[in-house]
Image (cartoon, rainbow, N blue to C red):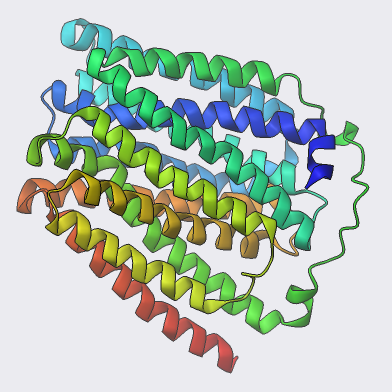
Length: 400
């Protein structure tokens, strides 16, 4: 792991990812409460998140075909600069509400601005992951992704707590802090070295022998990891768009309780990302998928049947384990042995965005129609269906 700290460019990229993730976490943690304060429905809360992630998916698909043609530093700088303006737009919407005389109401402005964030991040994240993974395979690739995932997920852990307490003072404060994070992201990204100027890594990075030796098994794990990732992020979309509403309006918890729940989920993310980055013991172990997805169902049931804050927080934390297993698994299987890394990472992000968008929108509709616990029944059904699909795919690909 020490060789990673000698790569200054890699560390700067990880720090830029930390600040961009910090911005997004502050926006996401306060957004459900802003929409409700402006008189929006649970469905409109879901639409804000869905707007971002649906646009993100569309642009990730487009980006996957062309992104490897661009210089990564320029894309990161443009993305960070654009996000500064979008975040200031969100802040202005909260400050002025419906008093600005323009064609769109405040909630529609929020949906539009969140959608613009989807465009920006569709370029930013795949380019970031493609850059840091280029020239690395096997154990070296796992270590780099492990450290990178730990870095940005640290922001996911810390900022929701801060955002939770800030929004108990004023809903504009988390967005003001988000603006600062985007400015810091731009400043750090400006210090990175272009990929053509980056020294060639000195470590030994042989091709992934597992992928070369077992191409059939690699395909099996690639496809079941894709199904797992999509299903898991449907649950994450429900969690991030609807859980705060359940806490405040159904269970009577303060906003900071939701901040703590997100932070605990991300704390478990960090632990699992670190563990999976330290070793390749988990490569090509299908039992890991089954255990993680079974745990999601347990977490959803805890959310449905418990009115206790400690149990709700425990469910959030355990959900983080499932999230990180699905994310890290597909991140590895999705690029291992590939050449156009940014394009492959765009596919990874497309699956994440599609799941998140679907979960956000469907969760909001279900919450309005059938009660605020119904989205978690739906999430449980999704995981069961995903498990069955994975079994079918595994057996089908085994015969090929």
